[in-house]
Length: 277
Image (cartoon, rainbow, N blue to C red; front, top):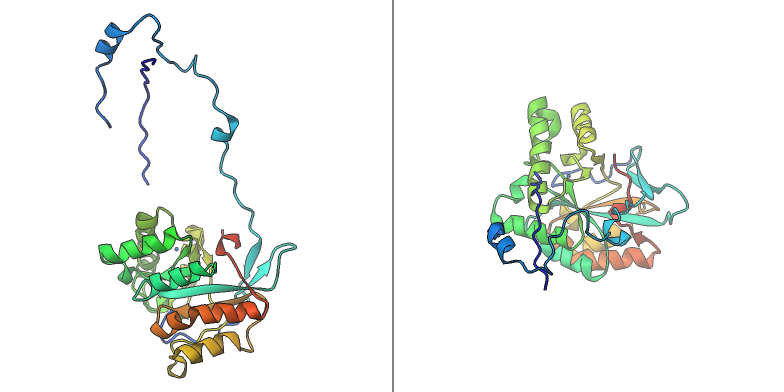
């Protein structure tokens, strides 16, 4: 076997909410002693250099293919619209206030029926190693993680400095856990400001509110009630952006909600297909 001495440099890479309105329609192994190696080399041994290395197969050097967006967000009513000849009969599932108590179970249930979703997270639910591990598991299952601010405060009540901190600090935290910054931003209570819009744009996050949601209202805090209103709703239409939360009753109803939507002919849309800045 040939002994190979490789030299190189190592590069370091720096790497909604209760009380929300129901309808809104308008985130070295130690180096070996090279001198001893050279002294002990046999005539057949070869020191490999860049000049005599064989070319790597093109497949190994191919750059990652970036998927072109197939849908966009209509900020007039927050629905999801196809960009070209895509299926318009889709709905987007979103889960806010994660990961509180049920987000991991909700992610597991959605994964079991191949239903993509965005989990909009808050920083105050990511205070412990256990909570961070839950978020990592959700992310590793393939779900998109969105920014819902750190403390879920109403942005219009905050100074510009505090608004920026609420948004940026959460994106930093999510990136430290998952390795990826959020690409979608949902303001608490759907209340964006001119400044939060600016920060989201600078962070290359798409703004997102919703079409309808009900699971914070008392009359819908059972499995049966929330499943019924989410599926049999006058606002359910092509591109509907569905708001749900990390809640007991919503978690219990989630599989029935998805099945009901699919029975009505709606595809649960992969958020990765949505255009972002």
